[in-house]
Image (cartoon, rainbow, N blue to C red; front, side, top):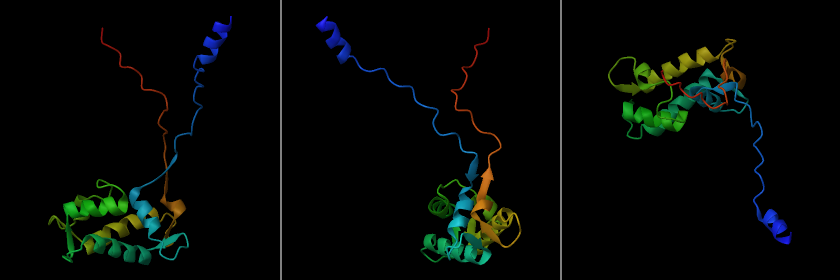
Length: 153
């Protein structure tokens, strides 16, 4: 009997099943919207077009260290990684390089960022707020394991 009690005490406790966890996010922020929000230079929670213009110029200069006035696509990917968080984040180089010369000038980047700014400024008051940076996700991915594919008969 003592041996049975010792064996029972030495046995590992049954693992408690995990709880439901955090629900999937329903609000998302585009990488470019995060950058625009971070361009709020005066810290009032609102980014103006002027603040964005200044911020984009500073971010461009941080990558254009040779002061060439333009970035090749690889340098643009370096810019995207540093300021948007990923080399493949949008806007991409092809949509930003409007003259198709395989170089992105500050003017081209400013124009693309201004276009995105206008899209995010939902109430058209000339500023982008944190709330305007949020995107509501229409569908939430299932947290269940994917179904196994059925084998054809």
